[in-house]
Length: 363
Image 1 (tube, rainbow, N blue to C red):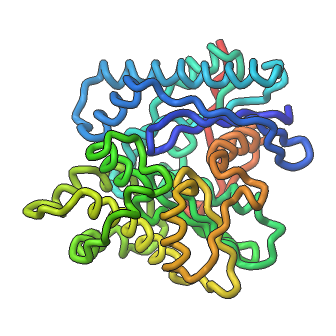
Image 2 (image 1 turned 135 degrees about the vertical axis):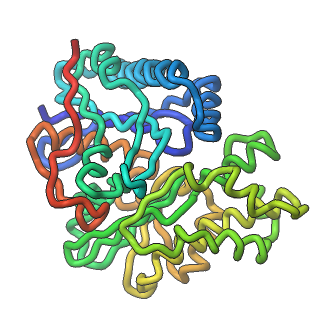
Image 3 (image 1 turned 90 degrees about the horizontal axis):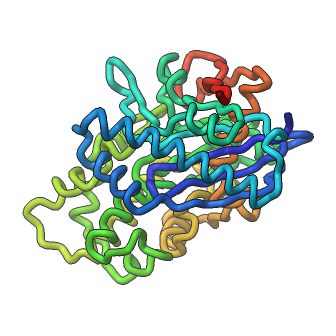
């Protein structure tokens, strides 16, 4: 089958991205849809991420609930596009990451969302559990997107940097056919939490609120002391580190204006990205941005000022900014069906080429 579906729910915990991709000759995005999480689901996930000591019943319930939500999102796309499910080779299902600890002696990662339920409710095979094998083989389990960036931008002669601004930021460097990639730190996750707490908004649209504040240099320097920022890749991170408790420790004993903290968190994203992009040549390299943060005009403005380079949305390269990671899931499913082994050793640090994903057939 040349058609695959990709399903992605990222660290922002805002909802589900679903794409339909045709891999017949190349890689053609046919359709996409975004389905926001029900507010109760989002709250349950955020509570779980903030307070990881939970109960087995809560975890089991969320796993099943997400499986049904993923299936509903896929079925909605199929109905919307009038596509026969028998034409779909597989669904690439990422799941919702609720814990990621690649640096533990027993490296582990956990994505909720039952592949069995999704396969049964859609009638389509599901390929999932992409990150576990990478960890088992000595890798970081993340980021996975650079291997797709390499496929999509293989035709570009110059050095290209892809900046993905999700809840966590990651970057990809493509040069002379070689690829590296790693997580740089927080992109939207801390800003989203802070604006929700102080403005009762799920995110700072366009960075408008942050643009009204001032950078708190002392706080910024304190945040940048975090050892993760100074580690060499391969490396990956998540909400296990960059969460409200982490920020609260740096704010202890201070009385800053909330808007200034928001502005400083935005600058933290910019500075930590700049550290990762330090090898970039603004006069020759291309800088491409994707992910939800690509809609934050103030963030992009500040990033361009810091890099002294133009940052171009991936849409201008034919890759919609909101669909890159869901497209990755569809591509990984297609690669699995073809039996293609992928080498992410230069990205995650894993040991050689592996067949990524586990196939779940519908009941």
